[in-house]
Amino acid sequence: MEAELRSWSRIERRLHKRQPDFTGLAVDEQGVSLGSDFPLVRKVGLKYQLVSRDEIQSLLEIAFEGRGNAGAITSYLNRIAKALNSGEVARAQILGLHFPINFLSERQTRLLKRAAVTEKGGFNQDEPRTTLAAGPTLVPCARSDSQACVPGPASS
Image (cartoon, rainbow, N blue to C red; front, side, top):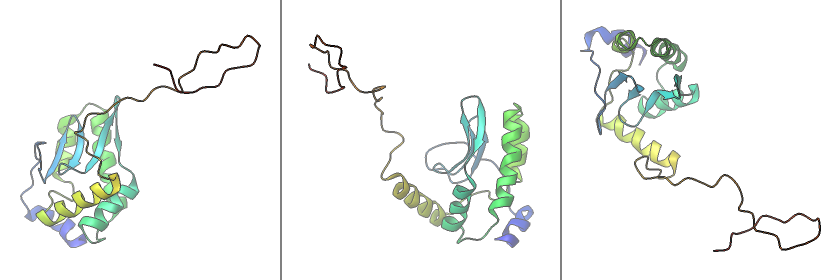
């Protein structure tokens, strides 16, 4: 992969728009994503944050048979995140054009999707979510002494 990374100038470089099942690199106001299923930099609140180095290493192991340098990719993503955090989306996109990984093959995309479903336990991010209660439901006490009531199921 190192030779592949160094020979990037021979490959047509372009960024991709986010859409279902895209396989390229997207750099935009939402962050950085390699394909539709592998975000590399996410917007969390007002800041952009990288995925962990372990997640980058997993990407390399799954899609590139362990070839590549997770440290170098992390360093590159740090520069893109810094540009995004400074509000310099165009600069981040220029850096994205030089990112060592520009697209995923169909095989790599399949491998990453399979790994994502396995790791998430079938999690579907498009499924509607329910919010959990902030804590246990308190049952009203009918006691007259000073002992506290215990939490329990609410009566309907």
